[in-house]
Image (tube, rainbow, N blue to C red; front, side, top):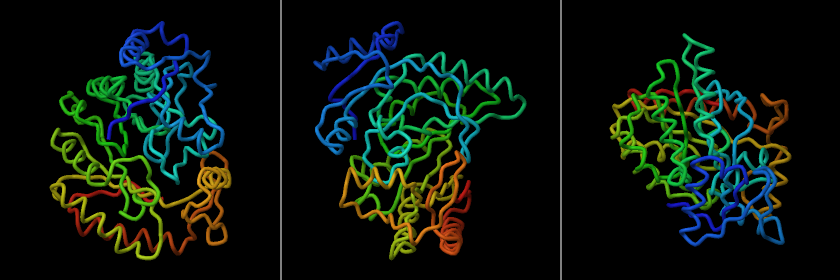
Length: 337
């Protein structure tokens, strides 16, 4: 699945950077009208209703300059976020970005990639000899826009030369071929976000099929990258044990099960803000958003969210970790939350 924007908006300062000029010329040559805005944080997209505006935003690419170079922390997967892009063209109903980026669901790419990587180098130097890990997809899926920016290629090549730095990224998209030939020194881990057929079919709109993701994962493994899978959100619906077992079996059928793999499990959770946004965009959503069956818990950023009660979390953890251990001899569960 290839992301092709329907509209492009550029922050005026982006033309001061080589990548900004390249993108401007490229999109104009493709016949796309390129509009300008004073800031990538204040963009207006067409549409009369919230669902119309949301769909339009998902086809809008904003080209800007990343001015904030203080990186956010990123628990539990890494020490810091690496802010190469923001947003995603997918329309997954449960996406946490609905709550954290409610008014700006459009895709943003940044043209000052060398400055961002220079800041990462400073963090690495500051924390030596500890290895510093960066998450490249904390607030985005960077793969769909890679064919335009080359930002991931630049980052992967950069980290290949960093003895004390590591990069991690996760994607639902399969457009990874431009990354396969890069020198990576196994210092970049690529993970694929996957879920059961029921969850993908009902809740992951405008994303590649599971089969496409797993084929891409096999190509990534063939290129020598460390490989992992993020299974998120784990939704405990009727039949979940069977379906997640089938999912893990399907992953195994596409790969050499004896290779080292990492698994990350994130159970379904939501905030009140996200629930309101989900139902605003799709009043008929079948996501399980009943607060009465959940436990309210405060998150790392101080806001509250609804999670599964302890007995359900404990059962899911036991079942899924046993499945991984039984199917993947060198599989490692990085975390289950």
